[in-house]
Image 1 (cartoon, rainbow, N blue to C red):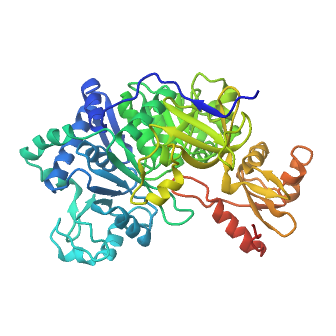
Image 2 (spheres, one colour):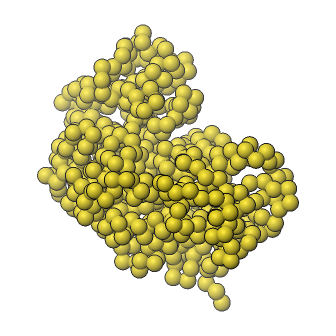
Image 3 (cartoon, helix red, strand yellow):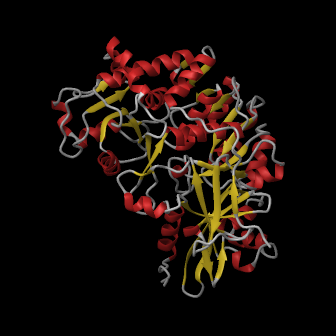
Length: 562
């Protein structure tokens, strides 16, 4: 009789049962002179002792603003030291940090601030084409005539404090550096009293999902959720005291703040930032200059680094480990990262914001083939099962929806019990919407998103399988496969292909490469050569945007489904 696709993680080591603030205090006591944070573009270097002191000063400043445990503090900025100070200072005194996507525009930030009732907002003046302060002033023109801390704005009624990172703040705003200066000795002493009453299960972070289907939802996470996930991710990648982890992924996302920042703090490693936003050249320069031992990234980031014209000029020999995650990781890209970037212990992580985020991770001890072709095995203290459309657990090797249960599952979506109940069933299982298989040894493969699966003439086609094959073509740098409407088959296969610099190709060449190698119904009918893919700020490909573009370009009609 076949095994069922239900796996449970080991139960050792034990879960951490303290708060994030306590975790930082322990780090500062254990590794006081170890570098905690290096922000290259800001010229900042802090030891754990210095970082912990700066966090406490900011936490005391928040108390001076009369912010109370449970109040929401938004942070809207690119990667910088101030972002991380807010992350740990809010946790220290029980404030709930709200991560705001740096790519958000006016209506999106208005929705976010109001959805969770942000009371204090910390934001950069601007980043790229986003002028954050100007957008907030447009939303709340009352700021200019208000005293800092006494804002009453019609469109964002909960907001009281607006705090600008860097530069001279405009009327009604407070400078970030001035917040810590507001604290008195009374506020400093108050920190310990507040911290003593915090619970590890308290909500500490709200992260908004991408909102590709409807309005974004605020995944609410606790100290226990993300601190433990950070610990086990670090364990899985062999992170240790003295390691230097370069974090080019956005801090506002779990990949940056949990798998990056928090993982470093609980393991005594250094958080290293190369630039405000992702720049492949800055990553390569920083790895060499800072002798980084670890590097995180989504596949598109690693591809950009490997394909950079100056790649061979840099000494990357210090690299050893890291995590590739955020979207499906092409096998050929993983192999190049290991061979050309010296990342012999690099692994793959899989998860979602709602699960803090990682549920599966490869181990540095896994055979190479397993590390490049699967997302590893279930994390400690978690359960995972694969279910069919009726909710029954399927046999090993059979695809179905991946569900996760355990410490990592979010508290819920903020102020949205209906959506929470849709995502987390009565038995505590988080339904991910991802299609996956689990083999007899417990290794997991992500086949795709349920909504991305293409049904062509009654055949279920998983885009990931076609993408993996096309990655073998020597001219192809990156490829994404989608389904588009077709009157005869219901859907047809479409491949968007980014070629390597200087290469040319044709639909005929791609088709010839596929013939006799993959089933005829998997061969792309449509091939579009592109310079880039539509993607989120975290590097996730937006296949729904690709589909919309192809429907318009080809003059197709959406296929009707029952």
